[in-house]
Length: 113
Length: 114
Image (cartoon, rainbow over all chains, first blue to last red; front, side, top):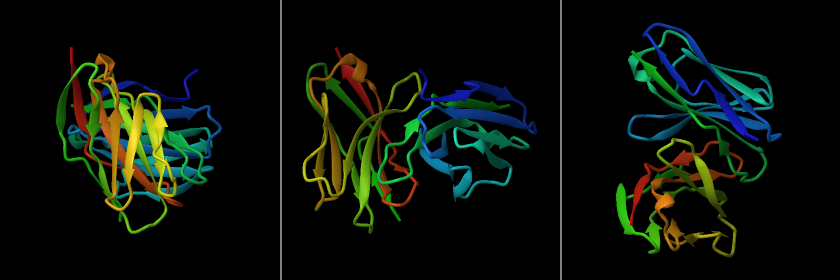
């Protein structure tokens, strides 16, 4: 049973295109996240949603728009893709209370050509 | 602001030896949690171990233990009896209580030599 799943696993696309990455968690968690891991393996949070409400929005271009249809899903839509968007995008989830652990999905490797 | 520092970009360790991966942190919040994640070459992020700032004892999970020294603001990961499958990137991370944001260090690439 996959706890946090992402689709697609790989995404290769041209500059200027619009693409979406989907994330689902079956852990019953309240909070979901998107992280970006760059080519140097540095991980940084992009967004956090709690029960479909946006909690964290780091300094991310407006071309990135998260959407949470329900608390088990958090999708990431990216408009007008740029070369610098090439990275691995991780979805994660956790309970909000206390210091609950964040569990990560397998990652989506995005390559913009 | 919270900050995590991992000063070892890479380490090579002989199989079956113990290894310590360093992590120091900085925060002004007295309540926080510290986490270690493993990222093998396949790319997934695997949670290993957690230590809360108020925990009296060091956390342990199987072969993993966390050497928590609060006064020094360090949270080193100790892996006992290393195995070839331990070869991976290891990330230290922290989160202040009441804040969903998890801040990561730059990682340490551990290679286990047979």
